[in-house]
Amino acid sequence: MTQNLLEVTGLVKRFGGLVAVKDISLSVAPGEILGLIGPNGSGKSTVMKCIMGIVRPNAGSVRIGGVEVAGWPTHRIARQGVGIVFQHSHPLPRQTVLEHIEIALLPDSLLKLAADRHVAERARAIAARVGLDKVMHRLPRTLPFADLRRLELAKAIARNPEVVLVDEPFAGLTSGEVADFSALIASFRAEGHAVLLVDHNVKSVAALVDRVFAMYLGERIAAGSAAQVMSDPKVRQVYLGGGIEVAARPAKAAEGAAPLLSVDKLSVSYGKAQALEDVSLHVAPSEFVSVVGLNGAGKTTLFNAICQLVPSTGTVRFGGAALGGRTAAQVARGGLVQCPESRELFGDMSVRENLDLGGQHLSPAECARQLDWLFELFPILRERQGQAARTLSGGEQQMLAIARALMMQPKLLILDEPTLGLAPVILEQLSKALERLRLTTDITVLLGEQNVTFALPHADRVYVLEHARIVWEGSPARFAAEAGAAYL
Ligand SMILES: Nc1ncnc2c1ncn2[C@@H]1O[C@H](COP(=O)(O)OP(=O)(O)OP(=O)(O)O)[C@@H](O)[C@H]1O
Ligand SMILES: [Mg+2]
Image 1 (cartoon, rainbow, N blue to C red):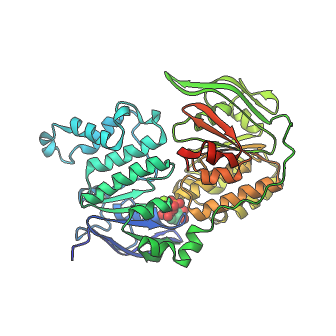
Image 2 (image 1 turned 60 degrees about the vertical axis):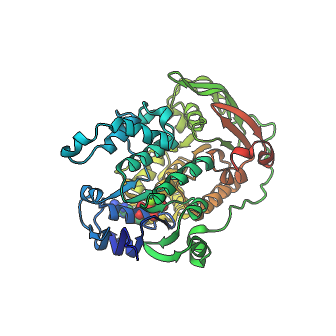
Image 3 (image 1 turned 90 degrees about the vertical axis):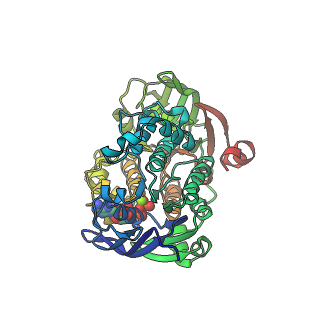
């Protein structure tokens, strides 16, 4: 029998009263990919952090190639051959892409430095392998989202760890990008590494992994082949949920009404790069409009320009008034509220404090009512009112960002990639919540998504944004036939 490269037994991690990981045992052999799935907050990232020594397990054993490392500091565990690709990228601000890879290539001992004269060459090769060759000399903050994820993978490849922990590599990526990333992860396997993979893209995980391990509330609920685990009743119930269904919508008397938002010939450039070019669109009161576009198409720039967060040319009118010259804060107070892709939570403040900030303009009674409603929508936030936002799981943070935007009782809510990092079952909840919003309030929604299975069912109308321009507009029913090829 081959020895497992990674062997975890009886792992326990508590945060105060919360047991985030309960008696978890799993192993990964060389040349094997184990998929770790489970709803948001089930403890997946915490398992990885325990293995990597980023958090110290309360009990249990972690063996890397037979060596017990539980309780070791991270740098020693890294030296033992473990590498992690984080759920969130935190690149260095002043180092270029290439420099990031070079740093990852540097040996951890000065004595070995002499042997590594070809660092720059190797860094270039790795950049090319992950598809970063064209942006090698750029700073991370100028990169689109998918490239930042590529950079994280490039760093992992550079360090060449025996055991690779990959946390949500597919989040926010298009199907083409997911295919590229899957191939890269499969190459780790082909080289005999042991890979532990977490992601909510169930299809892609199932296609890639050798086995699946499912968690819920810190515990193991199923393990086996992808097909076995995905058909397990408990996994279906707590993780996969049903499909996204939307009731036939009542005809809104929107036709002919003056638009709530109208955008005319909006252009934005970042230095020489044109991020948005002559974009015109409108949203009628109570309408639900989706802007569909791949990564880097310009969705976030469009929303930021509408909200006066980045300078632009052209006009934006909201409720008939031109927004040019207003501050982003004035725009938000006027009822045009964005839930940004980057979430922008106050990490050291509690869940409740973040929500209260959103509701600060409401009367105490209104605020309480709104909170109650949001807690019904996202029950986990009620339980976690006192927890620092920074320590929430990825999906929990997304829920908080959406809830905080809703606390402001927006007239027009802009949601930028709200599905990022959410488990299928939570997507279904979010979908129901949006449905309820449109049936019970007269909120207007502008949704930016590349996940068309989420964006289309809710939309009254769809725009497709490609390379900084609107290239198609129409009803969701016509989307598949006329514009869908790249997205479906
Ligand atoms: N430092 C901390 N203090 C308190 N609670 C924490 C801390 N870190 C994590 N938690 C909680 O532990 C639980 C497990 O979190 P974890 O990040 O492991 O979830 P996850 O399975 O990765 O979820 P997601 O899919 O949303 O990323 C969550 O409910 C989270 O809020
Ligand atoms: Mg996580």
